[in-house]
Length: 327
View (spheres, rainbow, N blue to C red):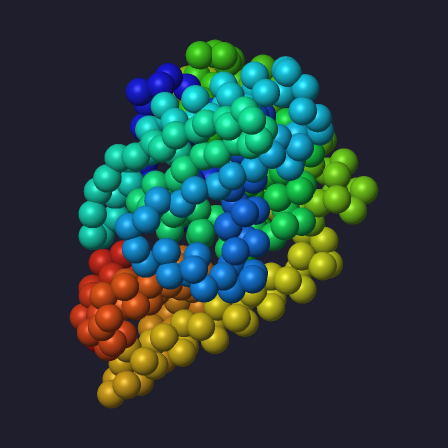
């Protein structure tokens, strides 16, 4: 990926769907940041929670041994390069309220006398990283670290489609998301070295009990006379029993959360709230909608306004983004 290329983020988990090609060590840094955020959230760190609603950048300090197997000179060089490259990567975020462009990290530095590394993440990017921290379990993050770079990306993509069990994407788009347009001109090589390799890696970890998810390419046919990458890839996603239980629990929790928030937003229009909930469940959009509600709840806390203030906006989002009509 070239330094001046941008990632377009339209919703929190779009980080896993965006176009980029992180190296192994850049991914190590990313996952370390996510785990660090998870620890803060799990401890209900008051200072950290307060900073989420402010404009303070988030600073993380670490020793190399926390991220790498050793403190060797090669690993110092790798992490230094990873931090430099992450600072140069440009993220462009656009949603219903604003647009901004930001680097993945503001800076990276190494304090030699105490052998400590430091990086800083912009407050603008923090809500999206917090969403990722909430979206992946520690078990899943450890699974990701066991995979090669492209398998990591595919695992992260497929983990976001637990509710459907099916993931469809064009071969051209998948190659683009992985940043591999210049490396694979023929689909056959891309399929063999990227997709099939990832299938085997992830299934191997699943069989060893080290992954809750695995996938299989179900179809990849194309129309006669079209370009090699102009084909739709359909993947089937399979889960362990533990993952199935977790998914059902997560669905129940998401429904409970959405019900609670919508009741607060529409105290005098419960029929509308119930109708909207039923529609979202039927269309399997409840998880996506809950992410919008979470951002709305964060906004209400930051602005000190009651949730009911945002009821008109939620009606607009439900109609325009989710095609809900209460007529």
